[in-house]
Image (cartoon, rainbow, N blue to C red; front, side):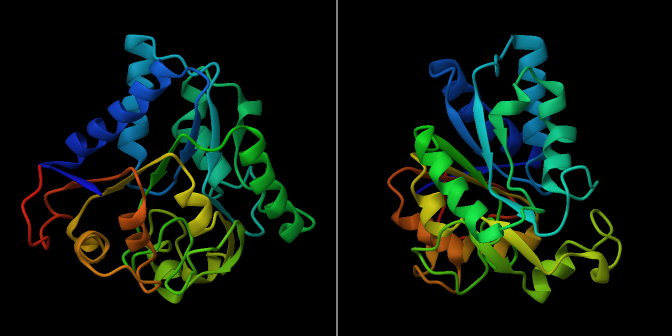
Length: 248
């Protein structure tokens, strides 16, 4: 696991965006795994800037998103499809038919999740997967206790995750937050050829130190990344504040 500590969120975001941009230039038809939430927004803004000012070409890129709330249609303003369109897809030259976000209103969610796994494999697998991290160490919606062999599936959200998503940035009331989601599993994430996890703010410091320096455990799903052959953790100084070692 490579750990990169940057002074600010902006620097963290630029570092992560550069990794993705380098891959897109090297492999124009690459398959990207993408994440939602507050953390990747500035990274997506940097990719948009690269597209508009440097000609970064997304025309052949394929994307898969990590998760989606169960029950929310893609046009709901808190759905992750809406988030991705608003924060990235609408501002670059990607083909919408090449952007895959889990369908929160699928008639048969279990069968749909199996199909999502099959589609990832049919398109050659994910070249690079972006991750955020929850305060409890979750990646995607793989909450503590999620097994290492888990696949895309229906998951129950913890009270902590529901509370984190009802802080005013997203849902205004905990009662409005869906209690279940569709999420890529740990095994799905680990099959990506490269994984980049980004985190900022002191509220993520405990999760980061457990991920990077703690033991590998289902209690901290992000800790499984220690076993990945090519994983990079990029954090700002606040998120790195509890790490005991000095990193680049």
